[in-house]
Image 1 (tube, helix red, strand yellow):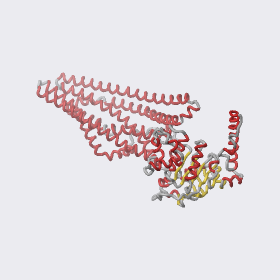
Image 2: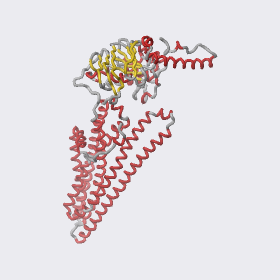
Image 3: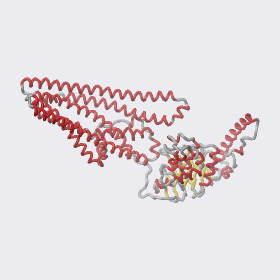
Image 4: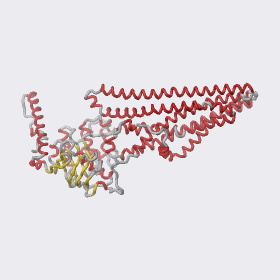
Length: 621
């Protein structure tokens, strides 16, 4: 996992390669872009036209006492202002319209790309960082498209038009005005350098804030359970304070730069008054020319300030686009072959042939694993934590690709199947249930139009979820809250069963699926599952061995290798790893029952409660 500062390092302020790639997103809206550029050029000409009209009003109207000329020029100035206002409205609308459309396209592209990436990618990248890509970074590009690429034409052409009008009116005063340019360029250079440094720190800290917030909000129960609130406050306060200080430094540089530009502008105005006023006294320069140049001077430095802001927008966009394109250029590790095999319904025969698998290099999680499951057969995988049971499930769904060996379904290597059609035939019920914000019906169907209301209700009834759903105020339209916060753990588990069964999968995988429910709910689920697993290939991962005693076969995995295979009774008779696992659970259960019996005797004066035969984890031996 890369440290935040490594990922957030800013590259060049302008990267032609990145800019060309960004401009491709403007191609579908090229007509609107051309219109916006033309409006910008038109607006840029209207602004410098006003001081020129002011010169005419003073020299040809006021100085000559020509009221008619003064009236015409005044009407011209008002018309120019009205026309400029209308053009600016259209320009603002079109540039924002372009920006929002481009950002919509780009954000959808990133979001769709995230769904195509392999599970391995999400193992290595924090959620907070990915959220930053889709939100902050893309929003920074919105500023580039809406007020950067197109609007920069206004500033550039405004400067060009101002210099053009100034040169037409008086070339000497023009040279006097631009004599302050070295000071302006130096101030701009220093500003860009300092702002770039502070911006780098701001971007690093924003990523840290997002990642810290996401991690600690998700882990809030742990924070509160272990009373880590004070330390969490302190850690976040440090990151937040650093972010504040970085922003204040940026504001400090802006606070110096803008007054500096105003000071340089004042120097230019002073030079115009000194030089132009002297010539005006001699009669070689009119009062109108002097006034128009003072207006041009004030107008000239405004786009200079705006271009400094555009530079900041450009720098932000370059840094953001580099990170966004880095994400878009990340290729999925698990991909379809050319012309993959699309299957509607699998029979459900599963075979592992000499499978070797490691998440990292050659740190083997599975070693030469081989087994076969016939269609409709139920098989349980047992073993200590970390033995490789869940890895087998992940490989079967092709979340990861194996390094050696073959995995076949219905005699065909899973690499040859289309991933979507493969996973549609496999349903998984996991221990950690994830529910989306929405109602119960949506969390069962997940928006699949093929799963209608009747199918949803039937699936819920088969797993016993309909009983608690019918007592909710809105039934199947009851909101579940974020991550199912409004439901109990057992209720969420029942919904996950209904979600899996509603798809009528050819292969059903239960990964510690009943570990989070009480005994009564578990018995209800087991009864439903025993019916539903008929004629359906099923793989059950369980630590509670009582829940798998009636499967067709049990496969014992130890340190990534298959060590024992057989039925519950066969494995007990073998006296190997499975027997040891069973005896450990039996002793643990028996000890807890004795404690429970003692408590009942104390409360009731004795009684036949909590015998081993009454416990589901002990029956069947």
